[in-house]
Length: 400
Image 1 (cartoon, rainbow, N blue to C red):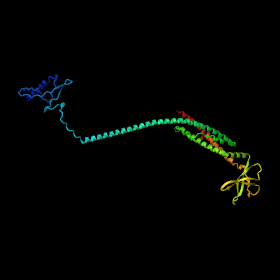
Image 2 (cartoon, one colour):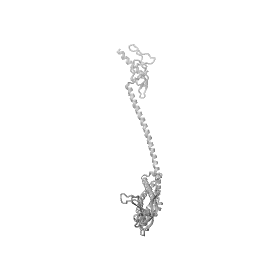
Image 3 (tube, rainbow, N blue to C red):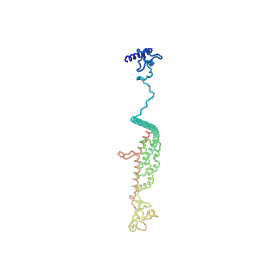
Image 4 (cartoon, one colour):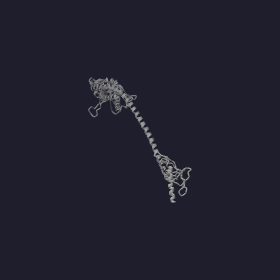
């Protein structure tokens, strides 16, 4: 049997060598497990022991490759002979896929949730970036619009500053004129000379500046200059109000003050004292005006007319009464007995009113020129404030 197997193996190699000699000179290795093939129609030669050799399987054709090594073509599958690893036979039907285990399913679910969370985060980031972009765009647009608006306000402020500079200069001219007139009047009062022309002059010295001058576009964008404007406007309005009051007081006081000053040089007896009984309580004295005052240095008249106050229908009125100057007679009688009063004790009008009038004028002078010079409480005055304000407005108007 060993000899038969040996012969058979030698015969297979010989036969394979014969069939491969015509193909490019290179003999491929036999396919393991493949039976040798013979030419169609050829009979199997007998073996040396008389047993016919098995008919070899058809030899697979060989294709030459680019490297010169022939590439064998898979031969038909023979039963019982295994295929080489590089020529596994195709399965007619695929094996059914194995059902995933519970652990594998759990992993898939966990991975799916992670992906879902990442997608949610990505969507949130996208929305956030979109919102931030919109906000940023709106902020940029607002900033550009705000810049244009500020430029517009600045242009209006420059125009308003030029107009207000002229208004302030015009007001300062009137303030200076008013200050000079008040100083002159104060000096006259100190000399007991009434400034009769002051009342008329004050009527034409109205300072032409008030809050309506600030009704201009752009005034609110002047920064620190606006505060100076408001302070200046307030002080000017206060000074105009005081000027009107002073004019009215001067008109009413002028005749009485001038009469008092005249009587100081030539004293006149303007008042007398009369006596009357007061319902059993005793005698009462009354100070009454003399209808026709008489000089102190002349002889007193024995009889003269007085203006005695009386209640008539609920109102106090002065009625003329004949009075006898007291000369060692009883102080009571059918006709009142009068005692002349020394003029120095009744010159209270000039003594009280004129100093108050002068003080009112000085207060307005201090508002215009300042006060407390050389002290920590020193004030510059409205005239100086107006000059500084005009300079500020000029600088603002030139800032184009």
